Length: 344
Image (cartoon, rainbow, N blue to C red; front, side, top):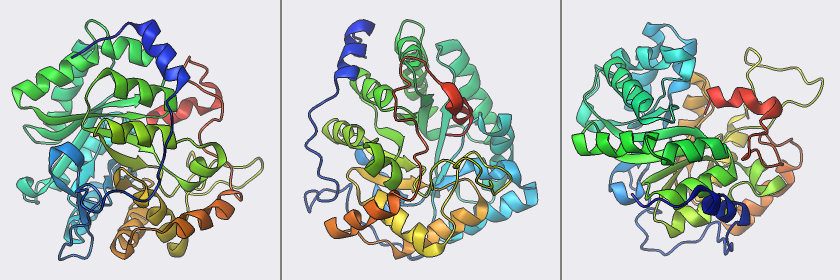
């Protein structure tokens, strides 16, 4: 692992990169953009350097914090039978409840046909290793296909995770031990995502890719561009977000922390938008079982968008408020968005 000084890294992240962002079109023979047909109708794509074909819609493990075990079993199996092979979870989801529910739910499925990803929100090596071992036990497996640093958002996160005794040491060691196969991170700020990409050669980046954030404050272009330059595949989160709740607006879905698109046609358009951006490979929908089912439907209907299709989403974006703050949080000014650390 090649380390840089923290001050140099912060300066680079703050300065950004030259963006020559082509949001749809990639080389025709680029394997990360090729749709791989599946008998279920839900296509797959190769997840970058991993070489693994994953469903273009991934299962949102957080959804299992709101189900009984019986319903969790049914939701996981139904998703698998509809063509989903990519399942994502984290110990932060429901303080372990999602992992505890997903472990038994996966037992009836063939493990060699599952791409299982997990995360750690610990920034130190010792804490990350303890969290990894707990997750393996809860998920009833001896390895994860993908293991990620979770919700990298501030300069402090980056400094600790990549410094001496940081979480990256655990990720590398776990890969050497065969406990994980590939490494990635999730981020909720542009600056943290850019910094992580510059610090280590990750296979994947999990990042919010959404038509509202894209058009209102260009939250994703720099990250997608640098990921592409570094050969890292992108997993989109918040693809069907309808942004933040407006003042006085009645919150639905038990006061969920952000608004989600509900109508199938809107979900189809939003999924089509995010999955058409290069190098996005797959998308994880908002964490409710029924929205997961609608997103699978959107995945089955997916076809790459044209420039005109993407531009048509600009007008729709103007009707909503961004979920993520326009002002950088990288230096630690979390403010009212502190609650989202528990959800991504």
